[in-house]
Image (cartoon, rainbow over all chains, first blue to last red; front, side):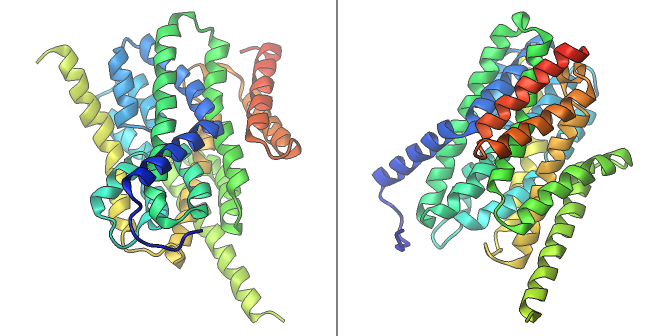
Length: 248
Length: 112
């Protein structure tokens, strides 16, 4: 692994960006996103939205839960309520961005260089990024992550377009199966990626605490689940570290 | 203003901005933090648990047509997919395919 800290020349940067796109195509998320956005595109057609509106919403919003809310409530709820539901569903991006950003930041990287990779951050890109970025030299990480994000976003846009066109012919069971892709892919990629105690424990606790918090109907249940389960996982990690240092 | 232009304006104000604001705040908050710092370890834990909560929510309160499949079938299909993942060389592809097959078979057998 290279230890140089200078900017890679432009042709290397383009090569690294392409490596990122290749990594996207090799990821299970590429196919999962095509499948899941097929379902979302079909939903957009059913509620009477425009083809280009659907594509642009993937490009700009780039968050399947927020887009599901947007598409399914736009014509039935007050715009203020829709905006509120969208913003609550996207709170997760704050800790995700804050956690992955330090892997890309180094001397010479400007704030505006981080705007594109952070816009491309969605659960799929983040999960793959957290796995792959530590394996490469810091000066290559932004270009690689941009390639990964653009590759996965393309899968979603293509899937959404196909779903929109096929909508009328999609039987309900197939539509259900397409929407089921997302939770399973997140579950398995996260399990494959979790190398530390915090990762595995936080995910397992999140699965259990999530429904319990949701049942309390206090709102913001995703955020509360993250704070509660994530803090417990971190506390267990600290306890174990302390015991190991004090140990025999 | 035409209805079409208005729909794009709504997309930006109601979809893009409410979602993107959290990414911008993440950049502001993550700026001064070190990759190995204790606070980042905690933030990682919170982010990972949040992602798990997204999975739990899609299973319990599913969107669109997935709501037509019974809850027991959704939970069982997720468990079967995860078991297949564990036993077939920790392959995410194998796990997703097994879970999808279980969902479809379960929906056909127990009604949707």
